[in-house]
Length: 110
Length: 114
Image (cartoon, rainbow over all chains, first blue to last red; front, side, top):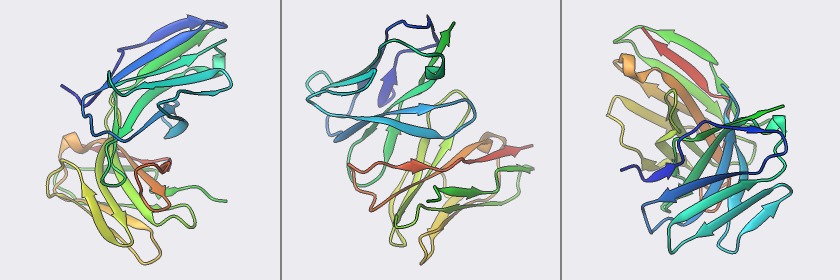
């Protein structure tokens, strides 16, 4: 079993749709949590950090449930420019070792 | 300000050869991490360096090695290349490599082993 698991993709949605990504992690010692976005053949870029209290950045909302070891990302009012692969990432401490999920591809259609 | 830079952008090698990849972190960042991303998968951690010391190593064979220089730039070396080493190699920098810090990725080096 992988340490970070995400919904298999791809997700194909129309513009304006709301889409949710789910992620689970297996190591309860995980200390910090992130969503990164990766465009085709580009490097990953930080979308947002995820906090236990939940956090929102415009159309994006991230939630963390430490008890269930579950992380989510909600995108509201999807735009064509949201098309990318979304990577769930955890850091279980001891420095900068990020553990990535396999990624979920999102395709937003007109 | 310049972001993380990596060189070369693309590389083609044959099995058994050796390769050196280079990374320059964001100015002021002292920690560099290396990741390997094969097609269809998320990046996988290889090494982390902070102040020229190895802070962490992932589950990679000894053919993989790295170092960090006094100016905080870094090199990743891979010896005796295998076909399975074909991947995107990503370098990430952060200020001190602490668990809460954001890591900023460079554009990567695409390595193809024939």
